[in-house]
Length: 112
Length: 113
Image 1: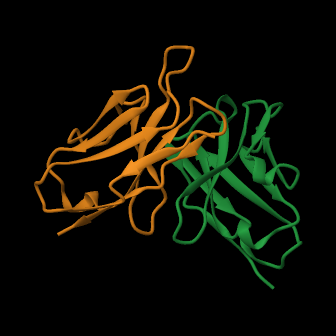
Image 2: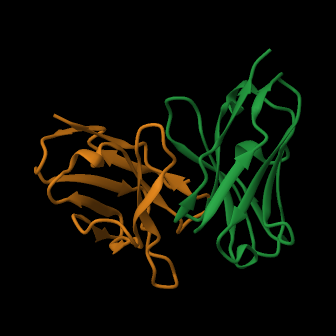
């Protein structure tokens, strides 16, 4: 199975600070069809996950543009440019290139 | 508005069975692959199973093969997950997902004697 390693596991940020989360894959996530099925999700406390970024860098509808994704192959990054209070929660990367679909272990964002 | 609402969870004894349902609305259900994802208490997300649009193709994680059965009724816009021979390690919140832009609120399954 593809292992997704997220760092850091916990992140503490002040309002307005920019932060980045890394997701490294044990295998390239480039599919033979040319797509890279690496997505980012946010799970706020007590809620179900919500999709933020899909296919590495595409912003899901309704998601603020302070969120951005980048990367290729095995190294990916989620950046939040100017953290807001509502951004607290656990961020997960996930891959759907290789079966079985797998998730990273999560990065908990705390607001100072 | 897309809505996914799971039901059928509860407290069950080890070895017993349970059938989860997910009622979908707000989109053309029959056009989409659907999935179940679970989350054990205080743990991360774990994909469980997926099913093709017509239901003819199903996919499972290795640890649930032979015990879990995913199915769908496109006439009723409903997704199911039959769970047999429940184990303590199946204790989790089970989410129905339209991969992966919409998720239901989840239904909790607790396996305990």
